[in-house]
Length: 439
Image 1 (cartoon, rainbow, N blue to C red):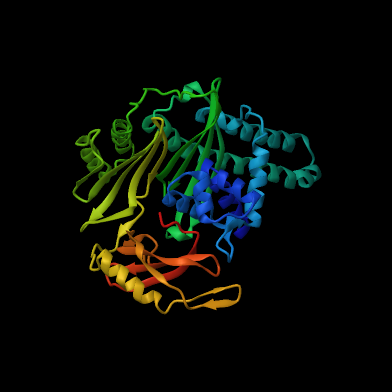
Image 2 (image 1 turned 90 degrees about the vertical axis):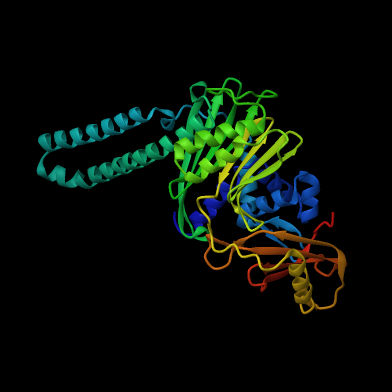
C-alpha cells in the first residue's frame, strides 16, 4: 500500500494517539458540533482545541454552517476506537525481545534457510532444483526483508529506549514493553522532513500505558505518554522518582535531554530554568523565554524563541504535566528557523488594518453572498503568532486579528479573522468564522 491511501491510514492512526482527539471523534460521531460546543464539552483552552483539530487533519471536516463533522476516514477511525476498547492485553511479541536476541534469531533463520538450500542442492536433481528455485528465492527475499526491517527497528528502538529511560526515567524493567508499530513518512508541510513514529505498549500488574515517540530527521520531536488502564492513581515505575513540582521536574528533564541530544539551545534553556523558582511565571535569557501556566492539576512549561518583544511560539520546547507526570514533551525548536524578527506593525495598527480589509470582505452561505454586516468596536483580539510565509520552516512575524460581529449572520458567522504580516503590514489572509466565543 502506498501513495494517498497510505497517507490516509498514517494520519488516521497517528491522530488517535491523544485521548482528547479520540474524545473529539466520539463526540462528532453522535452529531456535528460547533467550535463553541466542543469547547463546552471538553473544558480545555481554545488554543488547545485548535491544535487538536489541526492534528486530526482530514478525519474532521467543517460544514458550511460552521459545524465540524466526521469525514469518511473519521467515521472509520471511530469504528477503530470502539473496536480497540474491547481488545485484550497484548501478548508477548517478537518486538519485546532484547535487540541482541532479535538479531541472533534473524541470523539463525537465515542460516536455516541457507543450510536447507545447500542440502536441497546436494540431494535433489537439477530438474527439481530448477522447479523449486523460484520458491526458495522468494523465501530468502522475505527473510532478508524482515531481517533488514528488524535492523532498522533496532536502531530506532535504541533512540526511543534512551529517551524513555534516560530522559523520562521510566523503569522499563518493571513493564512488559512491546513495540506496536514503527512508521515512516515524508512530511510535505514540514519542508519534506522524514518523520518516524514509534508506538510502544508498557504493561505491568498495576495497569498499562502507551508511549509514542516521533523523530523528525532523526531528531526527537515528540514524547507522549497515555495511561490506558489501571487502578485509580496508577503509579508509574521510575528508575529515579522525579520531583512532584513540575518546574523542578522540568529542570531535570531538560538537563538529561541536553546530555542525550547535545543541542546547544538546551544548554541555554537549562541555565534559564536554574534561575526560576515557584513564583516564576515568565522570565528570559538571551533569545529564550520561559512561560509557566498552571491550571488545576495540569501544568504547561514553554521555552520559546523570543526577539524584539515578540514570542515565536512555534520554535519552542514544551512540556505538559498532569498530577506531576510528564505526559508530553514537544521539541520544535530544532525544526524551525527565523526568517526575520522585524516587528514594524503594532497590535493596534494591525487591528486597524484588519478593520479596513474587512470593509470589502464578503462570504457565501448556502448560495447567498453576504456583503453587509456590522463589526463591533469591542471585543477584538490581536494575537502575535509568527508562522511561515513562503518556506514552511521559516517563521515570519504575524498578527492574527479576530473581529467580532454584532450578531450571527448567514452561515453561522459571528466573527472575521484577518492575518497581518507584522514586518510589512500586508494582509496575509481573511476568512469568516463561526461559533467563536467573545469571552
